[in-house]
Image 1 (cartoon, rainbow, N blue to C red):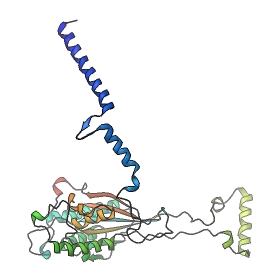
Image 2 (image 1 turned 180 degrees about the horizontal axis):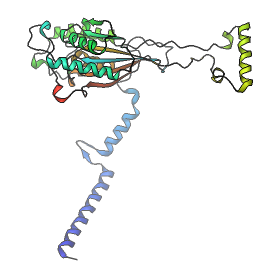
Image 3 (image 1 turned 90 degrees about the horizontal axis):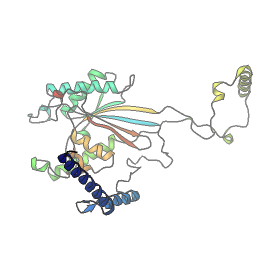
Image 4 (image 1 turned 90 degrees about the vertical axis):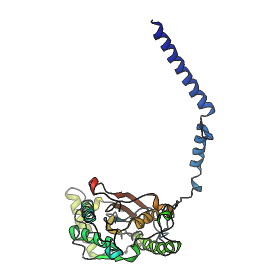
Length: 328
């Protein structure tokens, strides 16, 4: 074997042996990462997993004060709320009446409406369309309604959904750029929180039919019931049970029923939507400035009749072309 090749081979084998020895040492003594080593970190994670009961993010089942002690974990109805951030608007206006949508903002509103029409089940009419009373939100809502949801007669409007500072963010990266004063946070925060409580709550459970217990039934058999039984017996003799006879119902239990799903469209503002998402998920609301929303983007939340909530997506703008996307 060529001497240079043998030398290279021996060097490579020695390096591999050194790596193997290092790995063995690391597994027994721990590789330092900062002030900790791998085994201690693994042990710490295991301990954290055993202390689930002490976690600070325990879910408040009665978050909307509509929880019933008789309610089970099953759900019979779901509210689907489509949150839409308004389109791009003219920021040079001196007051809100001048903050009208730009041409791009109108295009974004139209695209958002088309996307909503595509994802809301065919034949389903939104239960309502709600808008902030600020000009840019009202114009966005009007375009969505006029172009894709004419079956909705009116657009509900609420001052509670107007833009503002919901709470001082943490970290506070807004104040250096002229963010709200403490008095403005106090005023806007109370209003936006009131808007959250007004808009976000579980739906009422859908009514289900109940099978009566034997004790609840009358002991008297009417002539009509006797006739019905006679007809069923004749059907059995002719070749099998009817569909009604084949279905078994447990006394005292609810009959299976189709789950009810309603859709609502809400057009408002970035700060309001971000704050509301965090409140709905019971996460620290002061984190609202840590993420952003595109103009005309969609955020979908679902609230079940048992009080559980899901956020399906946030600031979806995938239905827009890159040149149609903006933040302001």
